[in-house]
Length: 242
Image 1: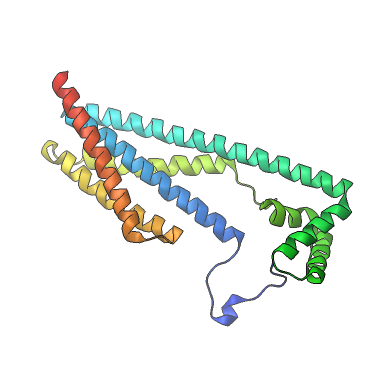
Image 2: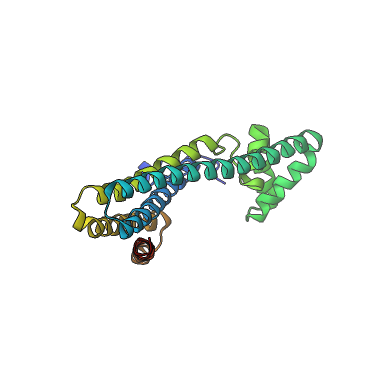
């Protein structure tokens, strides 16, 4: 628990800290993953249809329909998921408010113990608990006990909109890649564009998560190539059969 603010710029440390930074990183990571889904799913659709027919109108119709359905599905899924999470957080916060009203002494003892469990001496833990309770008891308990920031709950609408936009942006790349080249080079250009885009999202996601970049890139690229190969093969078989 930080009891006083330290100006990092005076120490030569300019890296960001705090819950706001973690929240922004989570949003950015979700955006990258949404874009990745848009790239892979839409590329699979347009390449699959291209395996069945050379008609650009059919390919674009399927791709645009896939973009719309995928973006809406992502948005609705994210809205439902975050709404459920937010409802749970509201219920937990309301329970904590009630306990603070009805049993304040027990709640103070509980907060003291939580800080003691983090390594503070019993005396310092009690002092910290008392000061934070006097300042904002609910926020203190929510942070340490519930791991929730009452003033920064995730918005279902924002989450849904972010998912919708990121998926759409990702899906536009394979749509453009399949639409712009001549008929003979559509699939090849789309595969190259998708591989490059997936490599980029792999690098970004690895950097955000502190993971190995090479593994993340290979995982993204191989997954995308497998998806396109499978759908192209299915499309080719269906095209011959029909």
